Image 1: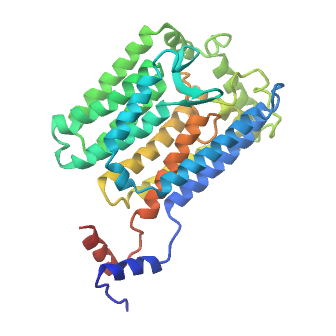
Image 2 (image 1 turned 135 degrees about the vertical axis):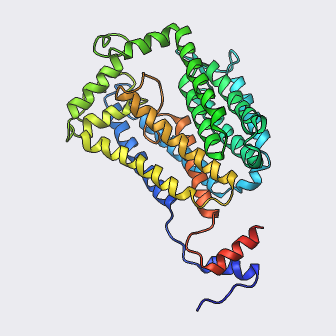
Image 3 (image 1 turned 90 degrees about the horizontal axis):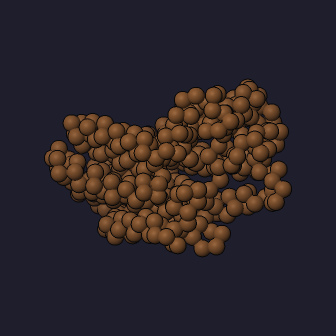
Length: 394
């Protein structure tokens, strides 16, 4: 028969002696590692034919993996509740960077978009920092106001201002895809926190209308959207990359052409190592390879949902949910774009696409999830231990 626990010291000792089980975040970590290894393999295959330096992108990606590991380790060990006390300074710092990137001669402009800050050959896309900051600040605000989320100001207006303050400078870069992602994650966090439908539904409608107007007023994006409606007819201009993407899937078939045997990346599909790396997987590894990628992201999502059930408080629940949403929604957008479901929009495939900034963000998000698995109460506690845990928390 199990002995009762009489004090906090006994409880902590019993926690230390309790066998540790592999949690759902361990499964998420395994899937992330598998996707990263696959990404490195396909990245080398997609860029091995580059005459200038076949290993350039692979070397840079390996550096990114190292940086992601370091950030992930730091995020997994930091005291989240202590860091929470500095939520607003963190948000203001991220906002300053988002504004700074818009300043001429400071922000790096590429193809008409000013999204990067950097020195020399190293640049960082500051919108990735903005994603972290808006998730952190929003989770903090909703947690301290969870009993007033049925009110218009406290439960809708103020949190929407947090979302829009982060989204506005990102839209100004312009980067409508990341803007939509930030707003979508923010609205979902509002919903699961308990905000009222009568406030959320009109906001969703207004957001769609605003994005439609933004596309209409930007000729290049309007042309891209209208071209997407007729991929075959515009394959020589607006949908060339998407058309070659679909060709890659068709050529790969079920079994694929084999690693290193793909042909679409040989100057047929520009920038195949970035947002359109999934078609390279489809061509070289076939249907089985693409389904494996989809399965890994599905496992991450399901394991994340299981993990969220153990959250000790609203703040950490929303923080972990935000991490999961940023990974999954970004993957869904990328997969939808390269398969012709969504209009063409630059959005890297998490853990796989070349890109230092997004890889660092993914490492940080996984680190936060590992942190929560390490610090949240473990399942399977006895009745006495559960009661003692509740007493300790109160």
